[in-house]
Length: 320
Image 1 (cartoon, rainbow, N blue to C red):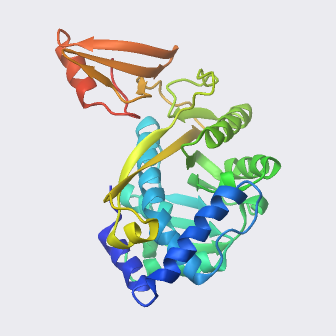
Image 2 (cartoon, one colour; image 1 turned 90 degrees about the vertical axis):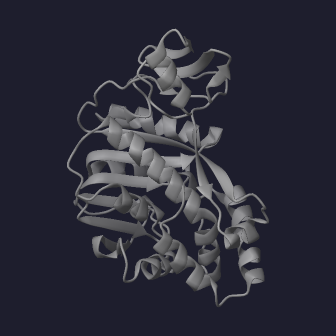
Image 3 (spheres, helix red, strand yellow; image 1 turned 120 degrees about the vertical axis):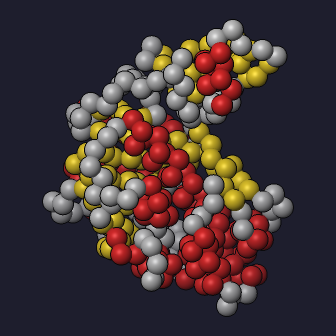
């Protein structure tokens, strides 16, 4: 998956006038701060150079993860998608993902607390899609006000920056603003998955229904330190590779997500939890099913099922 060409061009144009060394140092500092300070509610990226480095390094992965999670979520639940809230918007990666996923969206509200993030997000959208659909509002997830509701509320890579009490308050507020669906996307780590599970329990207690990724509304059946996460492959630009000191032209972004709806979602097909194990004439799948975690083997004797299993990858729904 790649960023939209016009977004890539806008990022590269902003970076053209800055020394690459400054961006590399900002990217390194940003990585250390997110590793050491996330979950404490502190301001992690504030300066203009730091924010641009963030856009170069993290925007492709965030865009890819939200696009993938959104595709899974909208496949599982159908509703009119006109108004969207991107809460904790950063520089607008989720807004770009939403704009690229639906032609029916009329307005996207980007809520962000950092002025430098808002400034760059606006600049990257200036004069090109999805700008006509987007308005930027300065605000904080920890103090989400107002009575407005949105068909879809997205919180991507933002709740993990809060403390546990702040996170609970934010999830409750986000749910109040969601008329149809709340989509939470976080890094594919055990810690983030544990936070997703906490949000899941809270939201179902508040009357929500799990639409994705699970084909059931019960507690997650994974045990023993295992966690549910998916992967999307995102392209790296030349500048991205420079800032990350990388040679490979892509990176695999691991993410976990949760989509909760106001109305019951239709029971889903089993979802692939692990990369399929392919042997001669046999494919073995680890699946999350309405009955729990199951391992199923498909052979060439069942042609349709074998064809579906052969095409399946981690995160896909398979009609077995």
